[in-house]
Image (cartoon, rainbow, N blue to C red; front, side, top):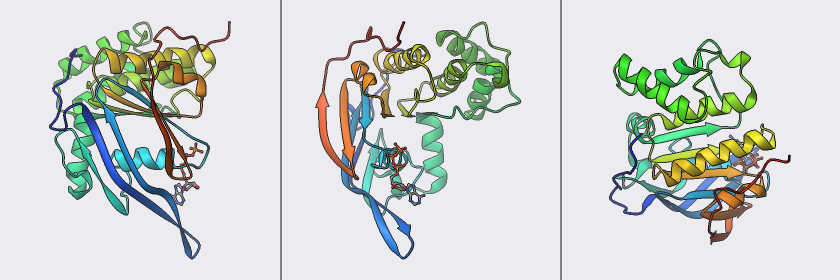
Length: 250
Ligand SMILES: Nc1ncnc2c1ncn2[C@@H]1O[C@H](COP(=O)(O)OP(=O)(O)OP(=O)(O)O)[C@@H](O)[C@H]1O
């Protein structure tokens, strides 16, 4: 992976959103899940988005990343001025080229080995077979899975599966990395490995890492903690991260 990124036309901001409103239909009424949310995230920062269940965290990530169209508001990202003004094909291409995604449920293909899970995304992006293999191996080694390259998900532990998912997201060296509850299915020790990898993606690769979590212990690794409640951002604080913080109970 390259060490530094070329920043887009929004400078330090990898992504900036203004006035996001998202409503869902609930019977005959609408519920407003995002209420005029402004949001931004910088290259090199691990930005944590925290809040109670149902507060709108996943909806926010989906609106920021081009997965769920907001009713109102604007998202600017990298060199794009208004993501939601683009065609769905262009939005998909933007996501493929620049964004990585890590979810709670890993979302791995059952029939593919760890190496193939990562390779397939790189080939889809246009890398040759041999370059894809090389890059996939490098990234899997980076997440500590050099010895698991040829295993399928069914025989990997939860922590190993999440590391494959992280390798898949990181292999293309994304400028924006979205993680939605990436540690919630893991024990403390594996959760710590995962949050440290996300920290590294921000510090060493300059990615803007946006991580949704319930777990207040993860704050220790964050540059910034944004709290959302009932569709409104209620606080936004910068902090000094501690890359050596401990999550695991020994
Ligand atoms: N597709 C949908 N249709 C209707 N309502 C939805 C839909 N998606 C989410 N909601 C509602 O929007 C609200 C916010 O959901 P969201 O998943 O964004 O919250 P969250 O903060 O991520 O919660 P959690 O921490 O439990 O994942 C919830 O009340 C949820 O029921």
